[in-house]
Image 1 (cartoon, rainbow, N blue to C red):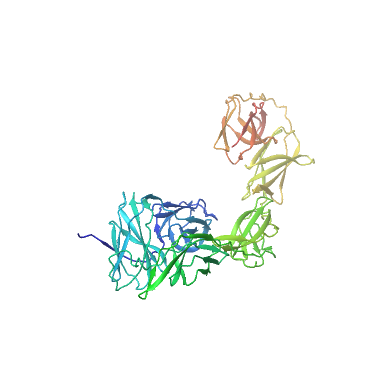
Image 2 (cartoon, rainbow, N blue to C red; image 1 turned 90 degrees about the horizontal axis):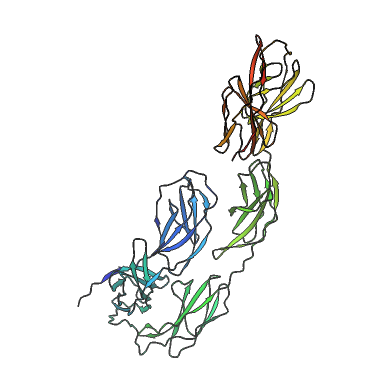
Length: 615
């Protein structure tokens, strides 16, 4: 009978990055951290996902502290990893200059592929002149098989796949001992694969002169017994002592070690029943097995491997120095530079900041001892703390946090120009309408008013450049003072000098005119729109010349915001702020001609007052 066999060459597997490109990049500012970073098994792949960082040009992927590649989207898949092994994973975002601007937290992930198929049975290993042939029993529902080779010095490696129940391997080194195992697979779709347990490993010593017809290259009558009573004690951060029951008629023992559930590797060959394992990694999980051997015809003949013994090394005790000598300098309105002394045994430092006695937040993670704090608020109190850390087995081990250092940012320098000119646009015996020149960059204007030589009284503020004083006394001198203001971060800055203007109302007249006042405004309504806009309407009055709209903010004095001839008005963000309470009222007025160039104005009663609140 002829069997179809597939030849698989041994190759070195590395972690490969599958690029999953995304064309959607939103244009917003970069942030300092990447959120929602996670890892999961996706069939035979380890899939990484995270929240995208807008305005980034791409992302770097780090495995065990080493950058393995870059992607342009917020996900990546890794292949070629070891099963039941723990990896340290992290991603960073970079800009168009390839400068990293944001980072995720580092997470640990242990690979555990889903196993839903049966275990491969009856694996037979034979060799002919350096070629190794594998044969095994098929597994129900499997459509392919992965072949693993335990390579001395490299560990257990997945060297390829076949769709039959046999494979021929080549490329081995004469005289070395290799292990062979097979795992069943079932492809569900392009992204998912089901697996079975790997078969029991079969070990042979490669002999280019051997013509084997059996999977057992050891003489069953002469191979050593199976080692028993394996035990481990005196475990420290980097060493452990292994003992086992000594066998008769053997030449030595190979000690096999697995770290963090990875593949077994021979770490020492020796006589006796005791050895000390060294150069171990602190805070790590290990499994140890022992196999006995005899020299027969100048070749090692092995017995069966012992059962494994599990142990965990102790966590490394590392003392990280404390921080002292904190200094903050070059303080401006929105920046400050922080420096501190070196901490013994430190790999890096975390900088935490509190604003105005609020909660501390870590804003810098750096290996430097001088950093610039940016995007600070002006005229604010800050406290900064530093803590040193050292990386120990993929985790940060911290020293003591420093005392808080308090500093103050400078007040922002805001200059507001002066009002240069005030105009009296209309003047009668009981009313004055004024306007003034604009000031570049001003948010609004404060209005002060005085009668004769009396003291000034605050009349309110406006974003317009005009105001109407009503109900004045005839033939009386008044003074008005206007100052510009600008609001920055909720604080108001005013012009250095206010502009003053004097005027005198006209004398009262006995000229007979139609001085009847207009009717009271009725059907007055207000509707709030678009958060900080309001639409006002009322019934028109035929005898009225126009209407005057006054508004009060948060219970303050009423101020005139509009004089118009129509019976509706849109109030926008120039008058209304966000989340504020307002009261508004309207009255009609009628202008009478007294004599050429002179006018008298009579006002009707105010409408009902309507209260409203912007969003």
